Image 1 (tube, rainbow, N blue to C red):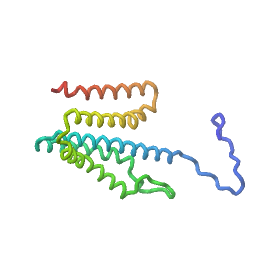
Image 2 (cartoon, helix red, strand yellow):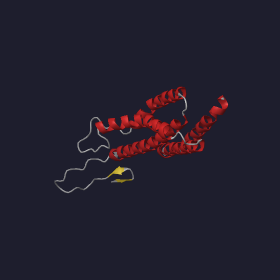
Image 3 (cartoon, rainbow, N blue to C red):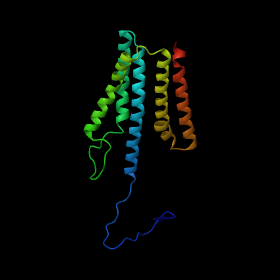
Image 4 (cartoon, rainbow, N blue to C red):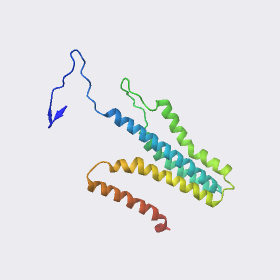
Length: 189
């Protein structure tokens, strides 16, 4: 125990091995894994719904190819960002539990990569009769899941550390970025 910044002696029973210091790294690692799993779940729901809605709107081959290429480029950056939090430790400590094994992690990466193309095909096959309002609803729901993941798993943890001025600056910059991105099509169009 510590008292006024000065260490005090611990009294342990004779013959007992000293307890290893608690660094808190186990809690930090499990929190990162849970955050990664939460992000993966939210982004998976978002990706499926968005790709399904895109599949219902594609009427010609040219548009479909353009959208598939855009999704592939997007996934190229998205997959490492999401799965870096879930990657298994290559040198695990004895007794350490991991959320995903190497093979499960690889399978999850492949499944996530195939999620959007499968959803787009499902949208093309089943959503031919879906009206524009239905497709708009799906896109709004997908956008809502993305905003939820962004707020709870990305923005709030970023605001947890630092001085008040730094927190206000980060919040203002995220708000400004959102405003610029939402008006960008209008400004460029």
